[in-house]
Length: 446
Image (cartoon, rainbow, N blue to C red; front, side, top):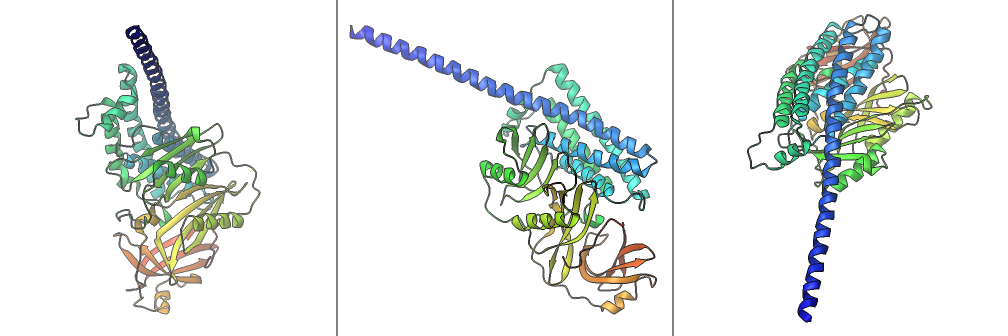
């Protein structure tokens, strides 16, 4: 009798284990299917958006009206931010993809900064037109490579989950068509870096330095998600995605992306210290309710809250209902253009819509106060005598060789135009002259 009872109990245990195993298998399959669908959607969206990006850049080149070019450039920036969000949702965290992300970020930054100035007074220069032509050619080549990958995945019914498994098995030889295709895209993007140039503040910052100012302890994934949600003002955790950068990235980051019907966002958060390196939020900006100056105060508060200290505003601009602000690090009355940060603010409610702090983290560090070898009066003699100098500063900029040099920075007017002129504080050589658009505002010592 006891033997039969044991047999029944064991049989029930085996049946229960089988049912539990089947349920676990079903749940696992459901998760895998959901992940596969997410990857497929993100990839096809990315491919489509690169197509659109290429078309819109081509259309901008064909336009002859500055009134139409400016909105077109903003539209290119919007599509670029969406493409970056798509990249963040692909299983490429273990595969270095930073050159392609940098290529897209540079397109977005170039088009946005060009669009926010008054193109009636300061139309596209020959150099900027050449840059647009290069971007059109380069985005076309990346579009073609992505189309090849798309064709192969559809024709052979390839799965993105296989990509993730292949990337996870570092010790094994990776032979995957999708991975090989993206490696080709990344190689092409790397070759485009020189063609685009860096388009941040003053177009002169050189990206050859190490990231010097990433302080703090390494963040866990849940800590990074929590911080990103606060910065991006996101409550819905189900629609947020996070991936780790792979080996070979310039700096280890968590890439966070988010999308719902009205808002999409993309962010790179450093794994060490959880510093926001760059992010973009795309949403409709409603009727302007706060001033450009109030937006500047919002930007200042955001930087201070996120440990960007001793930052001064040196210019701002408004496009439609969005404010764009450029900040410089300042110490001992010396302005450091290499340590630049740019912030975008929605002027409907003061929300922070964007941050670009790559230059700051790449260049910022402790420096001894540089001493000029010529006087301010000697430097002024090198400035065009027709320029009426209004303000002057000591400023460190990167010269054409990528070397930091101390300069006298003079802000002056000639006729109805305003110019920023940099004179080398060691030998009196004219390093650079910039013509400022009428929409830019200088906040003296911010």
